[in-house]
Image (cartoon, rainbow, N blue to C red; front, side, top):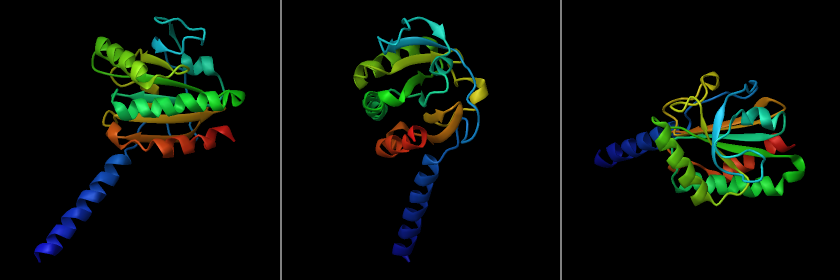
Length: 186
């Protein structure tokens, strides 16, 4: 009986963890990606946008394939994800792949500090780090879930082709995210 109870508890814990990773956040597959404004804080020194500029990066990227990362965390796993995305930008430059990281938080000053830390730790050279004008939960028209620590939206032709969200940044499956790029690079 004792072992049966332990087994049931382990299964419940595994199911709970799986459900935590499968949080729904942001625009879903097939939806149009709308404009939203951000302030560039760091990164992508050669993209023609100065630090401090307020613009719509989604608009700047047009209908090109693009990855929009929305994060409330600047931890190692997010830095690893960004580092991998940066490598994919270089590898897929002929396909005009773009990416930008939106750092969110309760206070703009804290989000800016986190964005700068993330830019430094990721060592990304082609990825801009930005603060959405709606700093607390990102653009209103994107439906980001406040329980998601990270939401990754991949779009091509102005439409969402893939979306993944995690309640904890530690749960990011970097390899799976990078593999999902095929959905916008075909």
